[in-house]
Image (cartoon, rainbow, N blue to C red; front, top):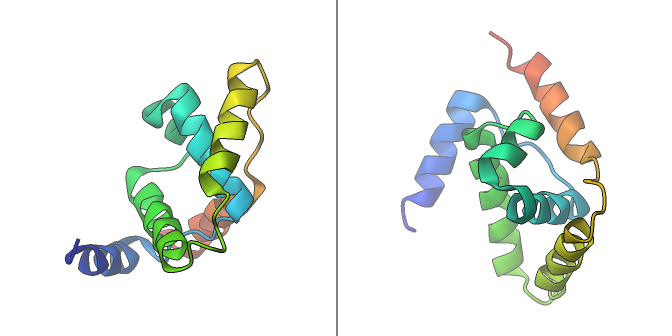
Amino acid sequence: MRFVPTYQAALARLHGPAPALSFEDWIGLCAQIQHAGFSATLARHDLDLHRYTQIAFQWNAAISRDPQKFVGYACMVEAELLRLHRGGERRPLPSLAAALATQATTFAP
């Protein structure tokens, strides 16, 4: 755990800052990963492992810093997962799509 900040800093230097993802889209992404699998979900959203790692670190750190603010996180993911299991459509993740599109043009070689 003590090397995570150093690793995240290296990812930011190599790939740019973490894409900004709304809390609602983070919940959706987590539920989709549990429903369809990690690799399939990342591929569906054109999200590489480095970007996912940055996003996950950002949200996991925020949730652990202020657990009272995010007390419903697990229940929200579970509710979305149940909706998906019952045949609900995967919801788009607009903040992720916008962040990746912005970074694709900003950090293009």
